[in-house]
Image 1 (cartoon, rainbow, N blue to C red):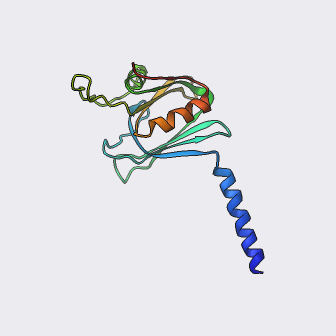
Image 2: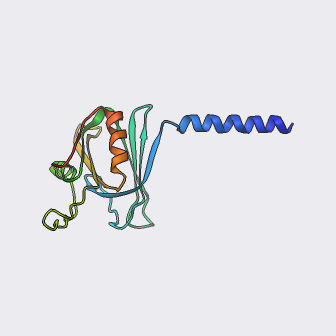
Image 3: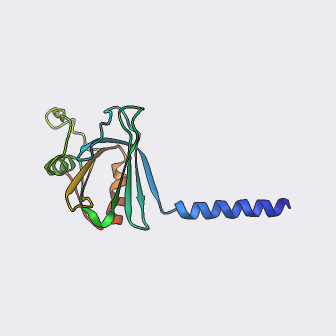
Length: 159
């Protein structure tokens, strides 16, 4: 009886790990701005990005500034993504979309203190209207190759 229970539990663990093996999840991300109407705290790094290979999509769960507000979930199909960008190019691409709200960018000290941790995603929503998301993360070097493999789009980097 003990062996039967043990084998059933092991089979369940293998089945669960097989479903999640292809997913990639990052959680040290901050939503900096874009066209998604949510107020996020500049000190909150609880936004989560998940890359799902089947069906190819991206799920972003944005943590709001207040604990009394619900998290905002954005699902983006891989074929709806227009462009991927990083660094200063991400700031430019996201800001170029009509209706994008970005915070004031602090000036770089003679080009020495530039923040290159931005990841920009520009995509079409269900009504074929362009939307954008600007994410700030120290894990951009892991996220961008996964997004590039998922979408087949090249990543525009800052000069």
